[in-house]
Length: 302
Ligand SMILES: Nc1ncnc2c1ncn2[C@@H]1O[C@H](COP(=O)(O)OP(=O)(O)O)[C@@H](O)[C@H]1O
Ligand SMILES: CC(=O)N[C@@H](CCC(=O)OP(=O)(O)O)C(=O)O
Image (cartoon, rainbow, N blue to C red; front, top):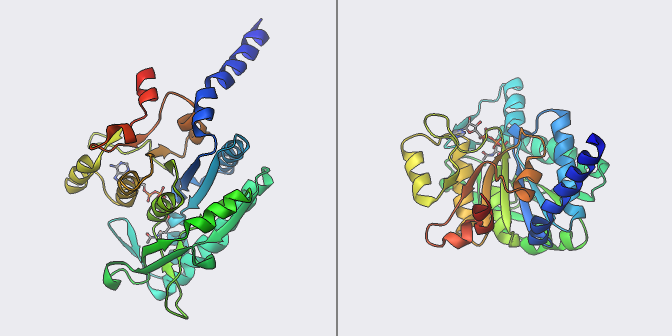
């Protein structure tokens, strides 16, 4: 009896996902895989399973990864001082070498090989490859080798997808100057700019909180441009959350249909967000065009 109920439950779960699978079939979804969410091997395996499943269902994932915690760990070991302003690292020349080693070397290759071992056809690249991401010094050089993106070659990324690859992109940018070490880009900003350049349907930010929290530590389910500015002004949103919320707002105001910050510590958080009516984390909406930001179907179901 229990076995029969269990089987029916499994089939129901699949059937319930049909409207969402239809909705996202053929669509591009950018997934920002934050360093804070890349924790236990088990959780990483679950992440890889989610990505492989998306790909098998005809959804086109692009992974943009971070690795800030690992960079800080190595800089500390090497006695290289490092600081952040509004969630963006100030990058000196020595730090830049470490940033590139960690992001383009260690983390990019680990994620790519993890996905491939789970049966995906993933290709790991940095924004420097074929100058996919170009940048200039951020704020006129105040942040050292931290860059501000000037252009993303979305066509090249889309061509990789057409060939059946899952791009795994390290947030390092090329410079127009010869013999330049390149630029360190905050991974949230890189994910947003890539989502805009490829014409993505959605961008998901996986991090280490349940979403954006208010002063009492309660989840804020919906944010728009004005509320984000107010929460930044009163200090509710700080540190690493600043580039994340700014990127979500930028993305939805530049053609991406939806942006969410979700808890990357929850197993299968990507599947829960995409294929269930629960809608976890914080979603971002456009006040001037609510239909563009709010998933009306989801709201009506709730
Ligand atoms: N209002 C807020 N809600 C949630 N997290 C916040 C908020 N303000 C600041 N943060 C901080 O932002 C962190 C997430 O940013 P970050 O550490 O850069 O993660 P990631 O590696 O995923 O980019 C949280 O762990 C938290 O410490
Ligand atoms: C300029 C800047 O802030 N670069 C980030 C790049 C990595 C990153 O963004 O990693 P998370 O997503 O894990 O925070 C850094 O150096 O930490």
